[in-house]
Image 1 (tube, rainbow, N blue to C red):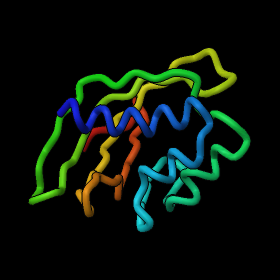
Image 2 (spheres, rainbow, N blue to C red; image 1 turned 45 degrees about the vertical axis):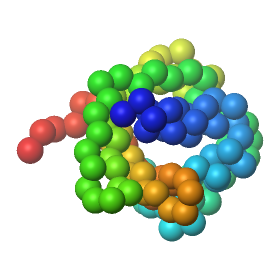
Image 3 (cartoon, one colour; image 1 turned 60 degrees about the horizontal axis):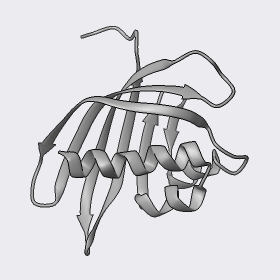
Length: 120
């Protein structure tokens, strides 16, 4: 699990550093994000960093993994973070699907659920 938390932290670090190149390197060409604002592809995810960092700090908590086949791992966790320029912390639940392609792992899917949503 630590390996996948480390990969996911690299995505968050790119958001903190405002580094679209590092972010792009971690996301698959066919990446799909599902967010409260709608669907996003890889360019949508990386373009948020063209004006600099979008997050000032973060913490990954309560991480867990599920394996769904050879080279397919889901990382689910709670994220506590602060957006750049804001003082209030936010909390959301994230699921990221990592796929082994070639010699490395790449993020192919991510969904963010903000705290406070209703449960089924």
